[in-house]
Image (cartoon, rainbow, N blue to C red; front, side, top):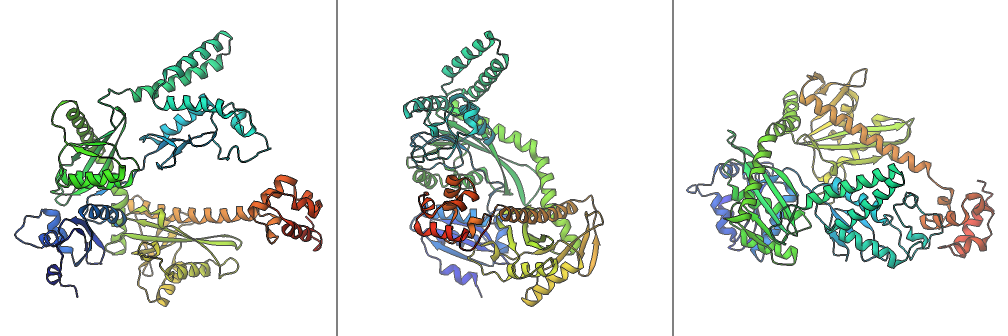
Length: 619
């Protein structure tokens, strides 16, 4: 038995991370401390004013554990990792994780490319961004390709010698086809230099060139070409307008402010954090983040939590971060961010001048978003958490968080497959979806196939604490009625497991009609959010199974005779088809001709020759 009073006496006076566990042994809070002994004891001292959130949390703590670190900085990093992994109930949490796109120019290559990237690596490429809109990045890349005709393929030029014809982009005049030797590296590099200037914000020369081409096309009565040049000029000017926000210095900065809801909820409240991104002194974009915070949390606490979660997941760290309020652990967060950036990072709270006005502008934007989207947030929660509550009431269950739904797909018994989809708090958790290729059952037997799927799922040996199979569902949803439910209950009984099982019953038109639970079909209100949630889960399980089944059929259809020859893998198969163009030509070739093919040798050539001749194979 864990005795909190006894364990408090054992706490060391060292820096580290403490982890609080609830009644179900789930992690409900993660925090860091300079002194674990002093910090953790504070939670259990009645004389301290801990705030509503902490008071409530302490009543649910059944045990705690801790991890000692060498410094507060190490504790900060570990705290960030644990919060991101476990998403504890009482930590201030981002409602969504966002990664921002970059434009990547592979200047280290002989013939560089312009690519879309979600990460910034130390690979000698040039990165531009981050941008707040993936769509805008793709538009810019497409525009650059049209203007400067840079390649977009993944060919390794000039190491790979391609004798086939150039790709479609060459014929669309959006690539100079360096793969065909149509352009030298020096000529190609001139265009890449223009691309780099363009992405750095130097648009004027490009606009002048396009204007000249537009006027020439108009004089020659090529009005469609002139209109195309005109549209390109307008697109560039729009990009330029987004870049030409008033300059406040040349450094990279993020300006961050938080607005918190003033609702009457005594337990939780909504908050919005607004971030302005300034790069090279220009405001390139902004974004906002929704958070759920405890009643009584201060703006400083929310900002501190946001900084740790946000910058733990973004690849770019600016030189300066400006906040509306100072935070308690500013120095250790600065040290952590400086280590991630590789240069000194400053966190500042401006009190006057232009910088203070920027922070105020971010705060006004956060207030506006919070007021505007409050109703949308409530509707979204009604679709998810509210819908789960309705399902709980129908089935007389409590604390329903994780639901797993199963379906079987086959066509006349061909390649039977099973699907498992997972919903947590009313939202799909796609990282935990699983596919099953039926191994034990022959022919079209949905009941036996479902029994196999469930047996394999619940006897799966977990690969670790964070493996999705290590978490058991609070409710199992079967695509069907009494028969499918009884199969699931049989599997659980054989394994000695007790998990509620519910069937999703459909009507004659194959639409969700009700829920089959405890040998009774429960009618449900078809206009309720709970009904819509059940329908979404049922459709998602069916879609996931069908897509897996379709992919297996596609693989079967593209199977090649060459795949059946020992020693002939994917590379050799492709090399043979490139050289001989057809299976008939391969069958007619001599051993010497086969051996002269790229990646082939005499042994593999003999195997191919024997396959088609000595065994009497006929294609």
